[in-house]
Amino acid sequence: MKYPMDVKVNICPVFSNMVHTDAWEGPCRVGTDEELQPAYEMRTGREMYKLWGARMKENIKGHCNVMDPVYVEFDESFVVKDSEFDKLRALLPEVDLFVISYRIPGIEDLGKPIAMINRSPTPIDLVGLYRDEGLEAYMAHDFPEFNELVHMLWVKKAVANTKILILSSSNEFPVSVNTSNPNAYGLTRKYGIRNTRMPFRDVFGVMDTITDTEEIRAIAEKLTGGATVSHVKMEYLMQDVKYYLAVRKMMERFDCNAFTTPCKELCASQFPYKNKCTPCLTHSLLKDQGIPSACEEDLNVWMAIMVLMYLTEQSVHMGNPMLIFKDESLTKKIGMSRVVYGPDSFDEEVLEIRHAVPGTRMQGLKNDPMPYELGSFTHAGWGTKVQVNMGENTATRRVTIGRFDRHGKKMIVAAGEVVGCAFKDDECSPAVYIKLDGDPREFRHALADGCFGHHLAMVYGDHTRAVQKLGKVMGFDVIVHK
Image 1 (tube, rainbow, N blue to C red):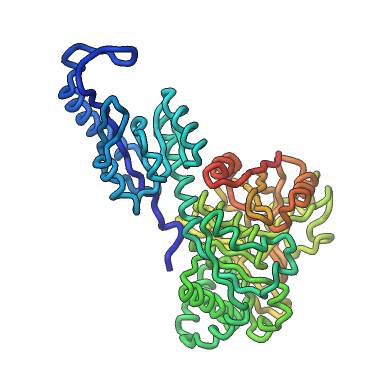
Image 2 (image 1 turned 180 degrees about the vertical axis):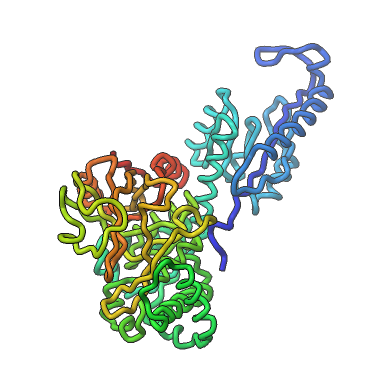
């Protein structure tokens, strides 16, 4: 499987040097007779090219490949010869971004994004020109700022290399998520996201072909071995692992690296009941591998999961947002079985995010898993779910929540602090309780008024500013709730 986050941004530094045809001084040119000679300008320019190129290689960091710098030369006619552009044209298939030292007249005709690292007036002028002409262009004042841009461009490229497997009911949108984006092709046009849509029944046929019980048992035993507590019978856990392997098999068959499937339609078909499995564990396992996966065929929250996952390189939780009233008991009123972090009630209104699909690597995809329990979604004991205490064993309790609208053109985000976490013995769980920076009632109104809908993605850390920057790079609007 081609993982989206394995991509790199290919950056080509291009150094331009103007070599005049003769020596003279004027309104924009001064120097000694020696300094103004063409031979002197050519020699010093090439020396500066080597130093500049080495500085680019040394200081540009992140998920990128800094290609060998290219030297481009022209004279005071400001016309770059085709022979000079041919050096760049040969690299076009692999280049994602040209980083230029100064303006290169005509480089915009190559159609590739352009950036400049410079605190002078020049990049302001060039970016203004290029963007007005419809070209993707960026400026940075120094390397730290540029490397932040590189990260955003990497997220953008990872998104464009994402192909989602949608095991669908074939409805225009799922019955449980009326606001889900009905136009997956629109996401292809705007972001490069591709999809394969298949009937959700097909995965159960694939399950029937998976007969390697040793592999299934090995994965199941690893899951129980890593859990602090497991309340699931091995036979039921193995069925959920079998469903997971069937989904992976379909993803590999259709070259997909992301996943979603409906819930209510799936339940109504009775296939989960007959096979004693739910998709919950699959979503958790995929997200811990850096594969965006969302419940209920909800493309809006899936988009948010993908963006936040790539941006932070963390596994992302998702769930329904419910308002918890002041002094409302979680165990006596809301139906939670036990509170694992924080109080049973709060002295102000908070937002609850609850679903059965947390990741264990929410502290970082390359970090150790957070402690987790295994429970069951159903009262009968089947349908494995992961339970993570999201108030403890965390580097921070600050979180960001967000969701895209039903057209995939804008994203709403809000920051807050985890003040509680509770588990339920069955159904969707865990639940995490968040004190938002802004009013939770107004946030819920904003979800409805802005045509966003309900499910929210949640990731550790306050990333609202980073999402705003990413929106500028990827071309979606960002609404920050405060």
